[in-house]
Image (tube, rainbow, N blue to C red; front, top):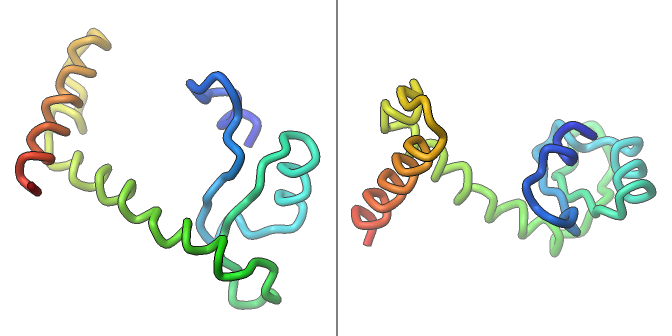
Length: 106
């Protein structure tokens, strides 16, 4: 978890971290709250008691939009295989893919 937070490109850490059922653990929740002051939002596993109310989990339900974007971006072979050597060219291809997806779904 520390590697993920350290690799963030943001200037400050997020206030909330949204994860799937695999992130549902009390030690991880306590560590994020105590060390980083980050609220963990993850649905409960079936074998655990309810630890979060439904209001927080509404954010989790909207997470599919980001996942769907990444799935759509895998339609573009240049992004999956990463033919581009320079990061500027690769970022340009990412922008082109986003523009194409945007115009397709408007």
